[in-house]
Image 1 (cartoon, rainbow, N blue to C red):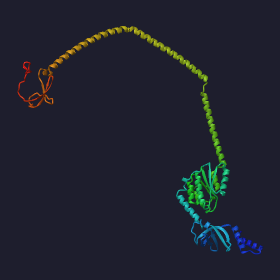
Image 2 (tube, helix red, strand yellow):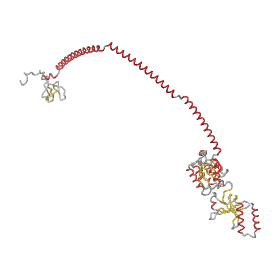
Image 3 (cartoon, rainbow, N blue to C red):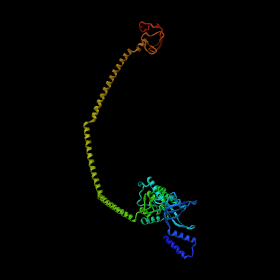
Image 4 (cartoon, one colour):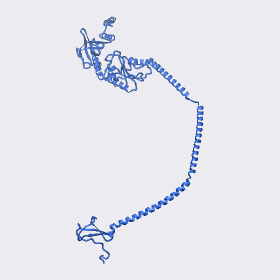
Length: 470
């Protein structure tokens, strides 16, 4: 409905009513504006900016031809990430309304960003470049998704349409898949902490893959999934993560960090779930392979059985062959024994004959007589040899006795030696007072020299007539 149509409706109501109060008129105008226009986006130059102690923002948006008053309350303006000042060209999203106390037409702003690229877009690109440089987008760190997951964990809003779409696809394609939901806020102040905690909790679960999803929205609505903390939590998750955020045209930092991006929540569910047709095709293929393998195994077993059957002999025939073999061996053994017995008998007879020819008893008697003669000859020879040896020993003993100094000592001579047992053979070198040793036939005398007499004659041994006692 255009503004002209709204004015026409107000005039029609005025014709049907006697008179409006000011409050009634402004209230009706506010309701009409809020219901008919709803949420709008307005671009213009910001002016007359002021911020009272309440924290709310009040400013004017204008262009070359018009202007409109705007209000942005504290609960909304704290999400604005740019410095606000007069003269800034901005894009404002909000609701058209009417301030009844003054009757001012105004815009209640919910979102404010620079016109054109926008602050959020600039922040998005800056973070994207930084994380790409850090390697969080590298294909080398992305993990492969399971072909047939055994357990799926979904991180999403409990009441969002995205969750319903995902569950509908799973029910249609792979209803046997167990699903665990970790409910989180997907926008607002609490969303960041809840999504990070959910990713950590999903990493601790016994699951195969994690689906992070939410429905579409504005850049600000999706901003939770453009935060660096959420991106790093996705990268640190212990399981592969599929990001299905917003619509096909929506891209978030989470999409680049996740192991795989899905353009929509439904597409994410389709990526993770095989279709019934695919399952049936795989089962048919495996059934065919199993049938072929079973047929080959049966054919091999049949061939093996035929081969073993051909080798199998009737036990009775085998027993008869063994009995025949036993009889044959017994006959050979008897023949060998008889042959050996005859051979040994011939040898024994030959030995008896040789023994009778040799007559060992006579030979032994003859040898004994020879042995007796040899013994007598040996005894005679030994006696004669012993006598010769005794005679030789006696002669040598007499010769030795003849030259023995002991015989000389027996005739009255003595042997003189110095104290060092060196014999004294001359008076030279002997002086009075020397101590000598005199060896006699029956003992030793200690002699002291009183005087020496060189040139004296050798005295003969004293006879019994010449002893001093005579």
